[in-house]
Image (cartoon, rainbow, N blue to C red; front, side):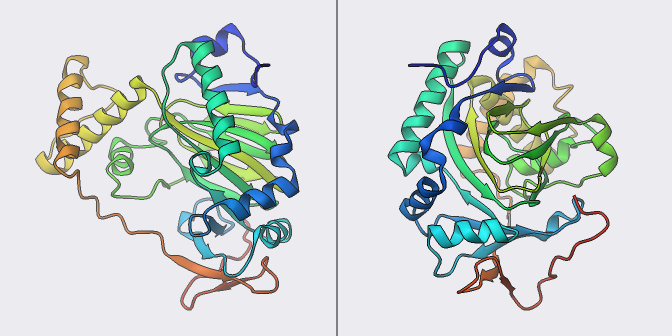
Length: 316
């Protein structure tokens, strides 16, 4: 079987630890034609598909809205994406679809064979999004690979340290006391890794690196895959423990200066907390704020009281 990705020695050595760009051949796969995507949407569990829209100001992440798909099937949703301002997310589709599941297994089989890195908890999300849609500045606790299948987008990746993310905010994401979105200052773009992401590219970045995404004037289809490695799980547990120590005992741990000899104790502490039920972050569940029109899915009907997004001079 031919490789999915192109590999260099630098890719093999840096995978899971550095910001890396690859080329791949999945954009030529019949799995991602319009008809194949329509059929996949219709196979996917109806209540799991997420429909989002967003505001225009990249600093106002409060305007990231979950919606209700209503009566629409896959074909109608694809038409809505083409004509509107929508972001469809099929989370963990590798666990519900045999074809995508087999593809995900092939991807990580190749990664393990090329790098020797053990991977765990692989979750593949399929993203189908409108021209000029965007995702606000945020971070993920797992490692991520992002694969561009169709369309063009700009991806901005920022260093996972102050001022781009504080220890407190990083812990808040790990403890699920806050959303993954973070405060964003456009001046930080000067220090970002900016990638013009085109079909046939894959990007992976340092664990917890904040990032944001801006579609260009084309429908985008991407694969966003979260996964863990033993080192990534270790780091996530240290962050979790630091968050508990800060919130329960008033300590001020810092991830960058965490003494290595303390980390095993923090990992054990984090595991014990999770076994006892975990930290109660009281994160509010995301609530639907709009409904797709029954006849024109690109038209959105916002709930009463929602601040309807309008274009602004600060648009992404």
